[in-house]
Image 1 (spheres, rainbow, N blue to C red):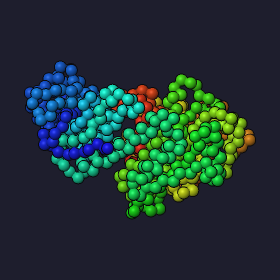
Image 2: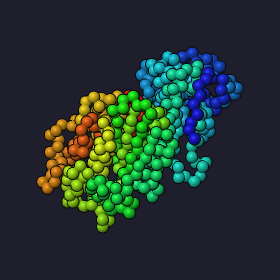
Image 3: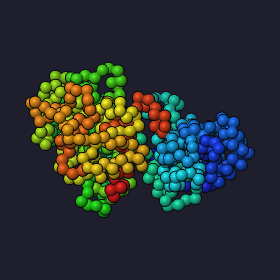
Image 4: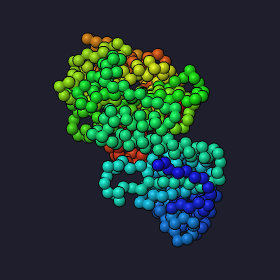
Length: 500
């Protein structure tokens, strides 16, 4: 059941808490609404800021319990930092801080919007709704003691006069944030519950929710018939057979009928590394190696739920990379669906193999503008940490669109080079290319050059989201818990809206 969104002036609707943004001194409380609230509280907020007990730092939250001064029993004072530097991410973090502060009661929070901030009221609504929903997420779905789990906010009220612009921004934000949390659920699901066939079932269920969204599942027989030797080899060592998951969204009146957005997701439901076995430490997190696929899946769901007038296809290459007597080996030479041959250097460089066949299929099925999303290389996480993903593209305009969508959505990307001379890293003596390099150089870009061989004609981009896709610890902003982040859902929704 989704979060309910309402718009109305404070006091006109019941709420368990009133959330008030507070900046750093000397401009702590801004806007008429904040001043009115503090007057009714006899200056308590102002005294707390002047004493330093409430500093207004981003992510800070202080709960005040009231005794009839307002219609609500609580006020949550939430820090937003320097007033003139407030942006969407600052307010997302404020929303998450309020959700965490209220996690023992849940219920309804009423956000006081502030017309003095350097963001439109619609942008404030968007960011606060997103942050409150994302910040209230709990990965502990498998805990059996309900009293140990935080209570989510069930209803968000935006304290302002109702306008169409405000309502549209808030409703859209709620849809996208809830889809993001659904992608997080998939990435956090244990591999004994989520494997290629069960991921396919989730896709079919998602398609059933929307009139213009359909799902098609290709099993091992169809994968072999299409000549997808790369995808087939990666899953050969597991009793959980691979799937190619295909979703198509055909809106009734697309703005540009000739344009088809192609989304390709790496969906390795568990990655042991295969015969090139990973170290044991943190291997349990390799259930999150399908986070790119989860982002593509529920990004597609967000596009359909928003009713965006843009045609789209999503292709998820789902496999489990395990070692057994049937597993592919270093030294093997595979033939991908586009006919190119690949020498295997490292079976732990499997993501690019499944993406190779999925990229080919997306193009074959009519995708004109392609974006693949994958937790691909640990080196990208070393380079950019847990905030930005790396972006590689063969088309400048397409690259810039994706960068802009990332900035706007909060799923940040940073462009990297794709110079033709990097291709030499994947040159092979025996085949058309190899899937890795023995040199400890440029691994994210050589992976991108590998994928480019299968991207076909037309704009294509690759997002390496190893860092921001799955956390070992909190990032400290509005993504406050370890595990899947739902990276890609918000970016895809923003990108698709810009194409419509």
